[in-house]
Image (cartoon, rainbow, N blue to C red; front, side, top):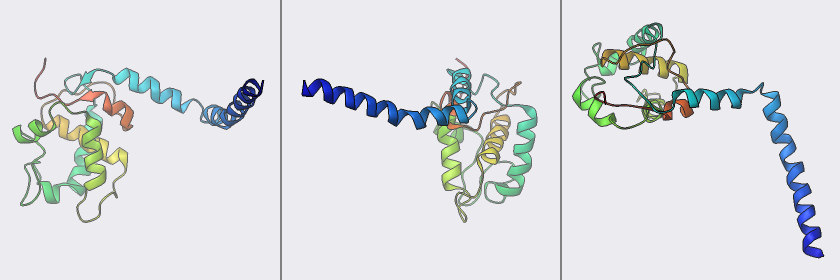
Length: 160
């Protein structure tokens, strides 16, 4: 009898604990549901599936020139202590990894003299520019900035 009563009390407490979480979901206007839907859209994509737009790559090119070019070079070819962001070595280092890994690397290590100052939109736009320079095709949808969606998009050096 005590176990049954304890179970009921635990169940009631669990329901009360979930109420604030449910309320947050409703107040967010479905944002978490939208993130799940967006991540699903990008599932099983590669950089060959036209995952950025020409306009986004253009914004990325402008941002790159202002923020990244001083170290990585105007042509993304690298500098004294900065690696190239184009070509076989770059692509080989990222081959088979999700774009979320690249975004995280840039966000948490760049710029080397003021780590973490770039917002996710700037980082993602620069990533679109890097994809363009490396010869991956543009498409109709912008590269998403949320990590869940980027986890589903894989870097592949060649089409399969």
